[in-house]
Image (cartoon, rainbow, N blue to C red; front, top):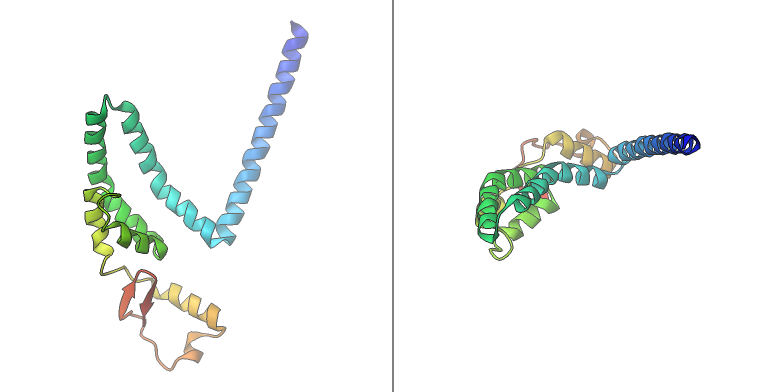
Length: 166
């Protein structure tokens, strides 16, 4: 009895320390990857947007009484989250906008409410901020923009899913 409780307490303490070490190590690795790997940072941003939506769909599926109730619940969620889908792809830019453009014309794959929002990126995309463009230009070309070009307009002439013209 008493010896078993002592061993159980020791095991619980050891498990607690191991868990805490794992959490701290995982958090440290996540911060490092977030700061040094742009792809990881984008994946985190994507799941920060998508995670709650996926969880909400799962919850509605779990709570539905039957197929008809589930479809009605899903339809309300499609309408509710359609603007969020658009904001997410505009925030993540690049490939996400391109995928949104493709999905906007696929009625067999995407609900009507979401496709209606995605159609907004068919012929326009939000421009990237000049500071981001300048930083990339200077990094890729190896010199300040002022040394490379006589003049450059910071307002883009146009923006698309994978680039913009200045």
